[in-house]
Image (tube, rainbow, N blue to C red; front, top):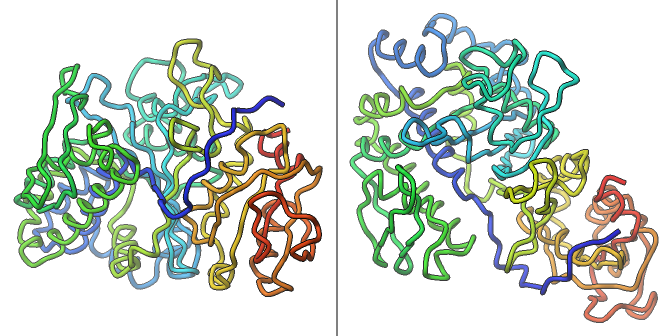
Length: 482
């Protein structure tokens, strides 16, 4: 089993959420919900907006009934009864781009009312998947996952199955393919293009954002192809919609503080907060008609008003600390990555593509299902360290640590370990962290072994307190789907 070369360790406390270009989709989706729920317009104006964005006409009596006693299976019903809700957020280039239907931003959002938390999982656009969207189910079409949404609206393949045709066909096709990767069944989708994000900020009269350093990006993509260099000074400044989009999307800044994943995430979160703050003020609500106009022709969703209201009511006071942001990534210079790698897995040589280490996606399913760790586990604040005992899988300890960095576990720097066949959880705490030990044993399929500082003999750099997970050959094989 040949694996990637070992990579340098890093601090556990410089966490990057890798939001990348999913942020415009997230922000626009949030404002869509806020505007529709809080707007006080004429029946015709709201009906026009909803019929354009959702394909449904406004039914005020039905919405009142749903608000009082929602139907089983609806988002409102699930949230009321403590059931998880999954929403797929898609960001696409729109008609100002050569490929208007490619979804370069893909984010799977899980709302968990039982724990009062939300997970946001970013799926890279270059992930290759064998799609089965045609009427003949045995046909498999290998392409990047960002192509799923465009299938009903182009002629890239023939014989598209009926459930992926029509107004919501792209959203349902994307739900199907992203669901195969994540293991999630989606309740609804929202597809937003970058024009909506830009026009939305302009409708608000711009937003105020502060930069910690200058931002100079000479490789920012131009709409007509090629590059359009952008330059922003350090400090607080008022941004137009185009400027906010540039700061949110920039990926190749000259300044290290801005080009890193951490720097991008910080900028994007600042923009999100600025838009949220302005959109939910009295002055922001007064701009609701302009916001409806900005969003109407650039958002497609199968959500109903009751869906939007239920999500808004549930999450309007949700603190940022309750949102867990993770991403599926591959190793790259300066990063460990986690469950993906880069090689030819179906698109042919010379094509930039990402491939799941486990082609069945079972390990990704397991990971995403575990992202919202039980609060009882996190409350123990157990010191946890991952050690690689699968000596034919270099870097596994880094990948696993990278996976669980954002979840709230208290992680130490990972280490290498002498080879072991079976994964074990070494408990140096004399049973002080029973919930965490049980959770780790369940996720990794391991047994819990009581340990002392001298027995079993620790590896170099290994902590001899708290809990140490020694990853064995059995877990390495499961990682690869073997």
